[in-house]
Length: 636
Image 1 (tube, rainbow, N blue to C red):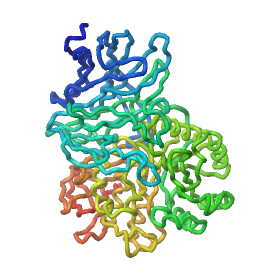
Image 2 (cartoon, rainbow, N blue to C red):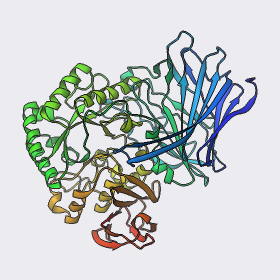
Image 3 (cartoon, rainbow, N blue to C red):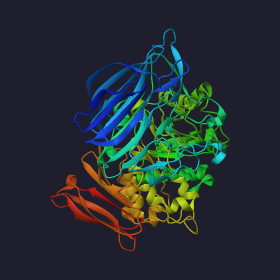
């Protein structure tokens, strides 16, 4: 084909025909368009990449295309849905550059999801290359508004640990809005295309063989492009591109599309297109955890206070306690072994905190230098296995480079060898990791509960953030938030400062709204007696794994109502970020004719519970107070 022509070279549609992608060759450049139900979601958007051996962005010729159908089922306990059936239509387009080097662009379309990536064969005698830059872009119609979170500037924040995906999402902003840092936007990224629909952008399948990426600033050509990590990350160490073996693959770029928000919230595409990288060394058990640090802070990192939180976990019938930073100095390994035995006698497993750091930031908390090298890591994990630790929380990563992706994978792989689960904190967005790494539990990668302790501003927008996460951050990966804070004041004394501005029932609702298979809840020992008993009873029973997730109603940044099923039991939770009470007429077919326990706030924001029979048609009227919430729990 003459590369001077502008022509459509291939097209693929979803199984239900509502979603389609067309591939074009425009004057030697590969582009694509996306339509949903006949309406434009993405206009002419660029494809291609540049390596140190070849440029695949210009002078390209179309060679061939091939179509096929995919179908698979899989089970995954750690995500929003436990049994998944994935059906997609696949299109592979082969192109050739002026040097006769080839590249394939592979698209897979399910009914509301697009996943695409590049496949690069050997380049003559070259069996490896460095991918330096992607042209991959997204051109939305001008009427689009954005729901984006800015990428944090490298080597800023606490002890130069940024970026850590801990910036707020801004709702309904114009396409041309710039970030404060000028560093682009993190994944996932949500877009509203006028009245025509919604699109969620992200990526999945990132492992040690590639870097993670993010969205660029909005260009003067009206396009967001894939951008690789800032070279300044991790103190300037490591490449900003990706070194790959040939033939090689890039991670999947994903686009979830719908005329409503339901497909966005309910998508499983981050897990549909990846596979486990190794077998679990044991049957990992998930559940609930206490942790003292979130409210009692550094001063609680001592033997006596940890005993109190072990006892709290036992009282709540929780599976775990997280013992956070500074335990190495304040408790020590010998007494820690004794403490772990005490926890075991109470039926409570232990997660221990570690600093990821070796050389790339200034975070002083210990244990340090135990996770950053293979020799020390394996020594430490051998001890952890011997004393009976169940999992790790590893903190302070601060980068998306391939060098950092290797560290994440090395920690996970080694931990699996020793039967340890892993939670990451101060970390990047997980990209398919729940399925790829069997012992991966979840990551923070959000403005999480600790910022409620440290920031008045974050306390003021807590309800706003809670109505954003189910539509954006938590749609693509488990989110270890560390919430459900029932102290009126977020201090050990529960007096004077850090006043909580959301209701108790709002806090209960977040246990459902936020999804992670291990939840570190922010309850304190005094909550056993200073909050209504029905709140504690609820927290004793709330699950952390789900078999089904359904969006009921909501709008990002305003309100949300979400239903989740655990076994045969449905939980419905909602939160209100507006300044007025919201009266909703909800359709809950899964609860039609069922008796439920309703937890709600009265007009004075005082919590109450009552038994409510749902109509056979599944209809119920619910009022949610400002900065409040509600929960319905199926009883029969």
